[in-house]
Structure formats: structure tokens, C-alpha cells
Length: 146
Image 1: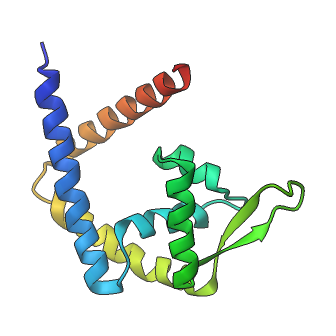
Image 2: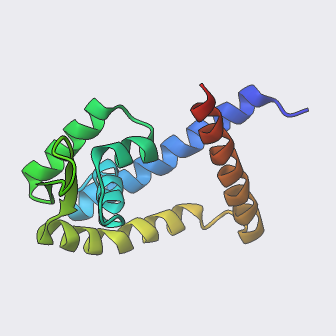
């Protein structure tokens, strides 16, 4: 039987160490946090991105997502535009500066991830990716039932 407490600890510690390493590199090279990079990736991947899309994707509160977008706006990397059919909502768009930053930071992000995961055998990494995708799907499905 799997020791779920140890699984939890290993999962969280691995994620924290990986996140911190990638965050440190993005800050050093681009002056951009990993959190900002993730938000910009979400915004840039959707034509009609709203705060709610960020909330669903990252599993944070509306307030936290809105404040994070405010920081991106202040940095000049994104902007809010009026939703064409819903006056209560705004759409998020990367600015040209935001698109350039995301394009420059993407290779750094990928390089640092690969460097940190280089010691893990390819087969084990593929199995871990499949397992984590399954775990994420299960957790997201369970969350909808709550």
C-alpha cells in the first residue's frame, strides 16, 4: 500500500524545489517571476481570457488573480479591455511588451526545467507526467463535486 503521507510530502517538496529554481532563473535573467510567467502564458494562450480563466486554471481566488493581473498591468505586460458582449467582464490581452517578454522567457523556462530534470530517466519522467496528469484530472473533477 502506498504511504500517501510520504507521497504528499515528496510531491510538495519536489514541486517547491523545482518552482523555486525556475523562479530564481527567470528573475535573474528577465526580472520576471514564475508566477508572472504562468499568468502571461495563460493570457497569451487564449483569445478571450478573463480573470475567471486564470482562477480555474491555477486554482486561486478571484481576488488573488485580479491583484496578480494588476501587477502585470503596472509592469506594462498586459491590459484589460472591455468585453464586447458582457459589460461586467473584461478580457485580458498581452501588450506587445508582454508578448516580447513571454517569447524571451519561454526558452529560459524550458531550459531550466530540462536542466533540473536531467537526472531523471526519460521513462520515469514520462511515467511521472502521466501519473500527475491523471492525479490533476481526478482532483479537478473532485473539486467540481464539492
